[in-house]
Length: 94
Image (cartoon, rainbow, N blue to C red; front, side):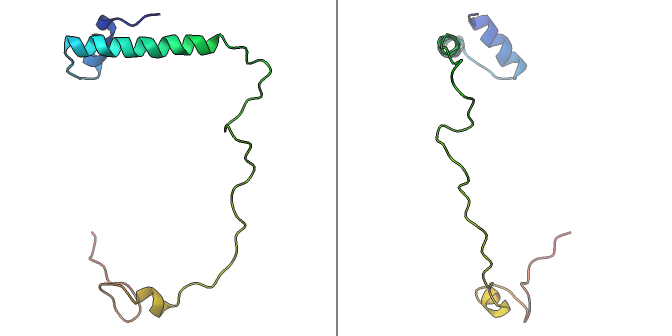
């Protein structure tokens, strides 16, 4: 199924885009190239290929959670631009 400049103009109108006729021709050519490539991919025999979600054989790439001591209150507030003795001071948001 080839996409024509008329189809591009219709889609542009639905999307409220202003395209010149040269842009419509360019986009039609680009989309037709993509569709042709997808048609080539459809011709491949993938019956023996397992479905995958990633090209590499990854298992679990996350590290184990390790409990570590956090910052003390004074360390956390040390570089705060505006603070009270025990907390950050921020502008009121209503």
